[in-house]
Image (cartoon, rainbow, N blue to C red):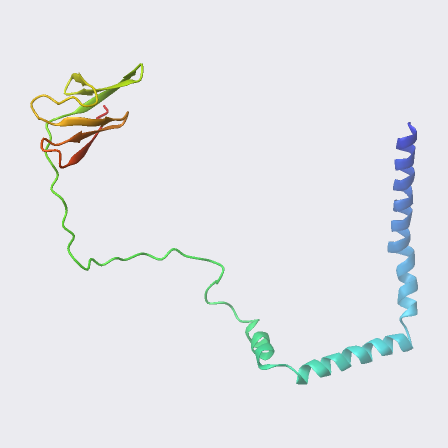
Length: 162
């Protein structure tokens, strides 16, 4: 064994011997020393403290002590999600969906130029879609944004996937 291992073993043996002493030898001495006047002194102190606290409890302390043994009706630490009920105050007018005869079925990005496949034909940004008069405003992989004929409304068309 190396010097370091010997030191560790010696420390371990010393701690085991000290533990045996504390648990088996010393308790018998403590029990004998508590007999007599010291034991009476401890009992007197404990009864005095008990008498002082019995008469001097505040209303809050008395309430807490009274409520401790009772079972809780609800757990304050448990948060339950409440159901959110929304009642419509006014009827909300929904916009009419524009019926478009286009289907965005593909996206191609070649050399920084994005192409959209609409109704089987390829279109770039700014092109007009045949037969509808809509102009392509933006092209994204998942959607395109088209502008109406008069340029007043932008419409988003999602990619149709099989």
